[in-house]
Image (tube, rainbow, N blue to C red; front, side):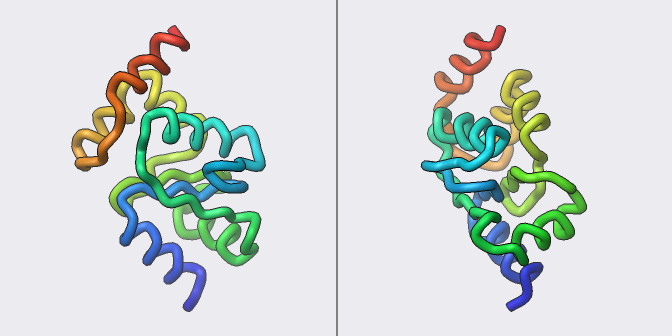
Length: 119
């Protein structure tokens, strides 16, 4: 199976996927840690893919999304963005709106606490 086929299958069979450096329990870069931290704090169920474990996936995800950096978040098969975009969406409430629209369960109180802590 090609990297593209593997990525496509992963994003289509999981509601939320984070391509990251490291894992959700042990991120290996600050940007991956920030996005995983947001998702973990909000109680979002998601698949994590460690791009450091497979160079073909690491390069393949950049081509798949036409986005040069990692982490990359996918919700219901759609590319949402990287660390800066996810941070902005979290603070503006747009990530809540996306999760609501896509039927992804998350802790609304936790999302509000993130915004309060960053106000």
